[in-house]
Length: 120
Image (tube, rainbow, N blue to C red; front, side, top):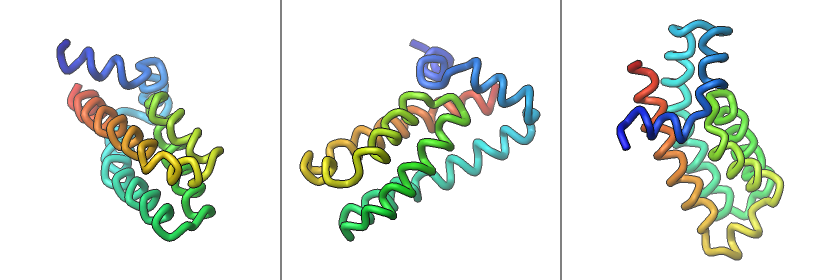
C-alpha cells in the first residue's frame, strides 16, 4: 500500500476536494498546517482534562478535534472524537485511557495522510 493509498483510506477524498474547491488550495494548505500544529495540543488537553477530572474541558477539546477532523474528511478521527465528546471522560478513565490511545493512533494516520495530500 503506497502513501497515496494510505491517504485515500484515512481521508475522505470527496470532502477534502470539496474543501479545496470551496476555499482554494492555498487556504486549505494553511488550514492543514494549522490543524497539524493544533491537534496535538487538543490531544494533550484531553489527557490533562482526564487527569484533572475536568469534564467540561474534556468535552470542549473532543468537540474541537471532532469538528476540525470532519472539515478535512478525517471521518474516523471525527467519529472517535465525537464518541469521546458524547460519552465524556468517565469511560476513558474506566478503560485505562485506551480510547485516547486509539484517538492518538488515528491522529497519527491522519497527520501522515494530510501531509501527503498537502504535497499533491
